[in-house]
Image (cartoon, rainbow, N blue to C red; front, side, top):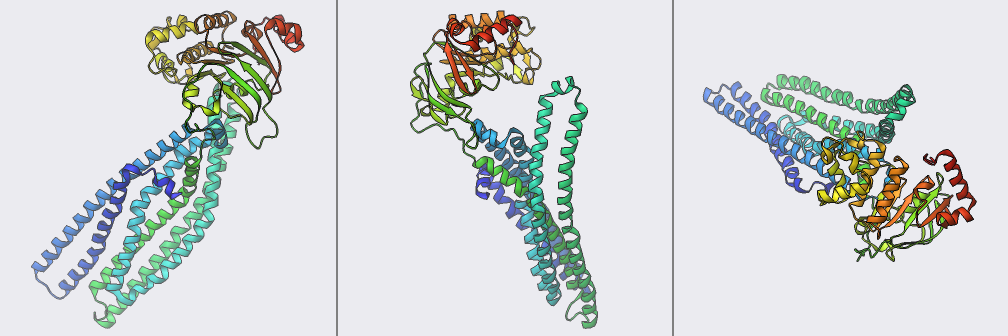
Amino acid sequence: MIKVLARSIREYKKVSIMTPILVMIEVIMECAIPFVTANLVNEMQAGCTMDVIVRYGVILIIMAIVSLIFGGMAGSTCATASAGFARNLRKDMFYKIQDYSFENIDKFSVSSLVTRLTTDITNVQMAFMMIIRVAIRGPLMLIFSFVMGFIMGGRLAMIFLFTIPLLAICLFFVIRAATPLFRRVFRKYDALNDSVQENVQAMRVVKSYVREDYEKKKFGAAADNVCADFTRAERIMALNNPVMQFCVYAGMVFVLSYGSYTVITSQGLDLNVGQMSSMLTYSFQILMSLMMLSMVFVMITMSAESAERIVEVLSEDSTLKSPENALTEVKDGSIDFDNVNFKYSKKADRMALSDINLHIKSGEVIGILGGTGSSKSSLIQLIPRLYDVTEGSVKVGGEDVRKYDLEALRNQVAVVLQKNVLFSGTIKDNLRWGNPNATDAEMEEACRLAQADEFIQQFPDKYDTWIEQGGTNVSGGQKQRLCIARALLKKPKILILDDSTSAVDTRTDALIRQGFREFIPETTKIIIAQRVASVQDADRIILMEGGRIIAIGSHDELMETNQVYREIYTSQNRAGGDKDGE
């Protein structure tokens, strides 16, 4: 785990190493000051001159300034190292997630990945900051104070040999009891974020059904659950502080009482006033160092589970990878499904797709019809290799998709999904997702094909119109047309529309399909739809049910040979033909 996390330190390795060195010098100065002060007290007790006092005073001031300077430098390098480490860690995780397949993302869930990228990294950042500064300062101060205490107080310092092991045992049992609770808390954090994400994304539905009170209660219950576990964990961790303070203050009381007795009875021979004062100072420093160590242990205990969750993400390999010597050129848009069976998880009981044998020529227009749950989307997701087949093979351009470089394959397969997504930025910014180097003329041509240019020209800023996150300031039909235009800018060999014209009227839908036939005749076009009108003029129509292909043919052929298709066509025409079947 430490090795994986350490890879993200990179350019901050120098400041990460400098911080403990600077802290060491700071601690040496702090621990030397009581020793010099004790000598000064002894000199004053012996009746020294003013010159001696001034000399000691100058030495103490210099030591204090050196300690201050190195402490400030340590704070600066520590802040740089911890913030930089967190930045690299967050970037490494994000880049890793970008390479994940859908199967990897399904394994973690989106809400869990968000928690790991935010809360977990913040916890690890705080722990790293404490490790390179406080965790170095605490033990060093403890060791130096302990050694100097023996030098100055002799047998009097033996009290620390009893208190430190007692505190260590206490810490061990506290951490052992709290760790499982923190592990459970972070899993509940994932569930809490999942609830928030679901609620925000479905806010329109929540308000339209007036379910705000229900959602508030659901969120409140999840938040209370997290709070209860955190409270239990914090209560256990809080036991550490009173036990520590009791032990150390008991030690200081012993030093003060027994030391005073020794000074008086031995008349300063066994222990003088200067040694006594330094012993009290070292006792206080030991208290401070133990408090620091206690804070470090608490933070490390909290962040250990976060670190494991982060490492899980960084160590997860994508289930989809480009092979060695991968093909980088897709010859054409032909598609072949040979004896394909597919399920989303190895643990799944049933196949999402079964016995799929399908051969599509380059440039063909293919329509796919089927009810909800017939696995239409599952079928087309195998073409750009968003998932791998469980059995059989999928070929594009005559080659198995598993032989292609993933980026090269996906650049030639444009998919317009059912749930269209636009990003915050101008219309041009969104269109350039399809082609970063697209010219204004190319964007306008793609929008004309997608029947989007007409409404864009009505905006005051036209193609520079700002799109809000998620495309909330445009209608569903406008959003779909912009997403189609974005896909066309890729100039793909295969264009897949996954029910992506459901929000446009039949006339606009027909114009889009006519534009495809006239302007991109060599591109293979696959149109998934719920209404027959959207695929009626396709070269072939595929009818799916229960993850299987039950019929293939043109509209006229299916009307003659397939009763299911006739029923769909008849029911939709009777209903007006312009309603989605969802």
